[in-house]
Length: 222
Image (cartoon, rainbow, N blue to C red; front, side, top):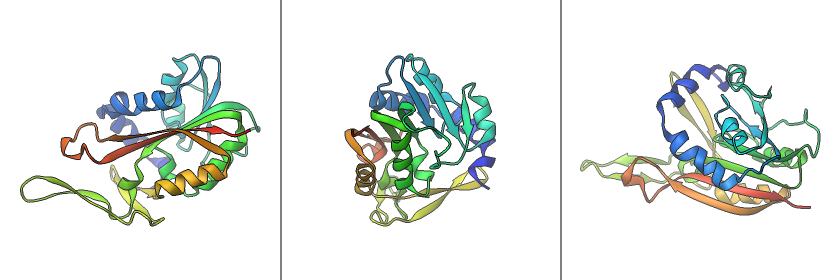
């Protein structure tokens, strides 16, 4: 089963999970800082929750989403397509773009940074919110000992491997890259890092010292 078949699971997951409203959306708005009158692209726009949050700031947002059913929920202009392919868009057509909890599902991150750099105007911004790479490393997981203490088992952080994680009754693929690999790939594509934020899990107190989310904002060099 692929992402194109997981619309029901995704909508049910969001309906019962407060993390988007409490953590993910505020984190995106913090690192992205959308500007009034600017036009942005939501990469992996899902059912449009973040499109609504950004347009409320006075911006115009278009989306790119693999799942046709989720795209139909957004109420916005959304192209149904698989990332990182953005060849259907004109160069220099947006002031910026953002990608939330989707980059880790894209097999070619270098093509992603290259493609966004083509369609964003020089001086434009790119924001990414993703599962922290320490979390996606193959074999990396929290474990609970016999006393109930939550410990962290590190995985193969410097590997470029991938893992299959449960999504309802199916599984989805997470592609792992180290933080340095991501930052270097973005730089090679012309992006300059302006801000990076790490956040722990918002509900699990024992994991307060373990990063759960990573957010970055880049600026496209002239």
